[in-house]
Image 1 (cartoon, rainbow, N blue to C red):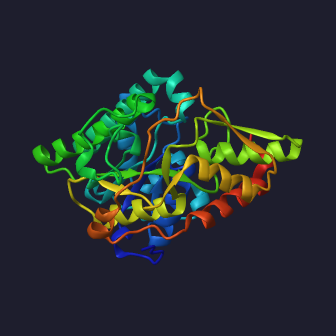
Image 2 (image 1 turned 90 degrees about the horizontal axis):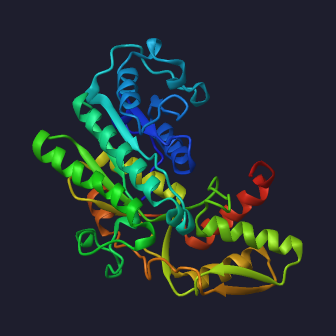
Length: 348
C-alpha cells in the first residue's frame, strides 16, 4: 500500500541517495520528504565519482560532517530542508544506492565491459565504506536483469541462482547482483544492516526518452508520437513482439524503496513489481492507441528479443513490509505520455 504520511523513522535520519538526481531518484526524494526526512544528501557525479575509491571515501567523510560545516554541494537548497547542525551519528545514516550505469539492449551489447565494471565498483566500494564508517543501514537496488534467462514465471527470489542471466545484459545484471552477495556476507560477518531490492522495469514521467539509451516504453512513446507528426505509415519495433515484460510505475517503485528502507531489515532479496505481465506486441499496440499513431507496426525480427518472459512474484514485499503497487498500467502509461508531450521541448 502507498503511504505518504510522515513517519518518526526518518525524523533523525541523514539520508544519502546516490542517483538522487535521476529518474527514479527524483521520486525517491519526494517520498522521503513526504515521510518526514529532514536531511537528504544527493552526491552528484561532478563532485563524487562513485567508481573512484578516494571519492567514495571523501563522500562518507562529508556525509558525517555536521550540516553547517558540510560542503555546499551536499546541502541542496532546492529541497528546502533544515536539518540540525549537531554531530552526525553514523547509526542514523541511511544509504539508498540508486546510481547505476544503465541502458537498453542496444547499449548493453555495445558497452558490456563498462556496465560490468562501473556498476560493480560503485556497489562494492559504497557498501564497504558504509560498513567501515558504521552506517546504520544500506539499501541496495538491484535489477530484474539479475534473474536467469529461463527463470520460471513469475520470478521468485529463491530462483535467482538457478542459471545464467540473459546474455545481452548479463554483465550489468551480475554486477548488480554482487551487491546481494556482499550484503549477505557483511550481515553474516559484521552484522551490517544491508538490504537488497529487485525492481522490475520502471516507467513514468521524467524517464529517459533519448532514443540512443532509453528503454522500451519511452523509446516507443517517442517513436510513435514523432512518426504520427511526420505522417509515417509504419513504425519499426525491435524483435517479434512475443516476449513479455512487467513494468512498475516509477512512483510506486519509489514508495516501495522508501517503505523497505523504513521497515525491512532482512537478508533475503525482495522483488518490487506490479504483478502485471504484458507482451511487447500488446504494449506497442497500447502505445499506438494512446498516442494516436494511425500507421502499421513493423516487427524487426532480425533484432534481439531479450529475455523471453519477465514477470515477478511480489508476495515478499507485501509480507515483509506491507507494500504493493497502486497505479494500474493503462493509467501509468497515460500519465507518462502526457508528461512527454508537455515536456518535449526540454528533451534532447
